[in-house]
Image (cartoon, one colour):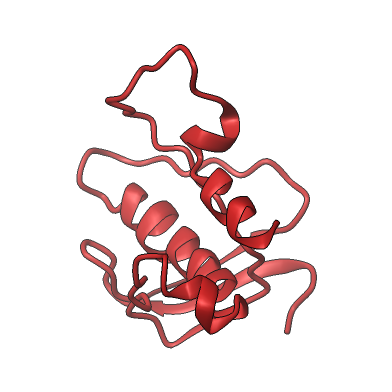
Length: 114
């Protein structure tokens, strides 16, 4: 497994048409493009989905029963990915009592672990 970057080969999620790419670790990476070009498919439906899926698979069967099942993205290969959380730009629930943990849903995972 590559330790220097996230490597994706053959991504075919939504608007992505069999693309290959590498994203270096420990750098700020920006995904840009016109509307409908696959930015969200790349960030959320491919990279984040696989990181989240791998994290959930590492939990016990007991803990997994309380979480929704995450589908594997349609890719040939993903390497160098770590457990992931994501914050979507549009958040419909604006609660003054929300914390970073509740907004990112990491609170649910921490509750299962501790």
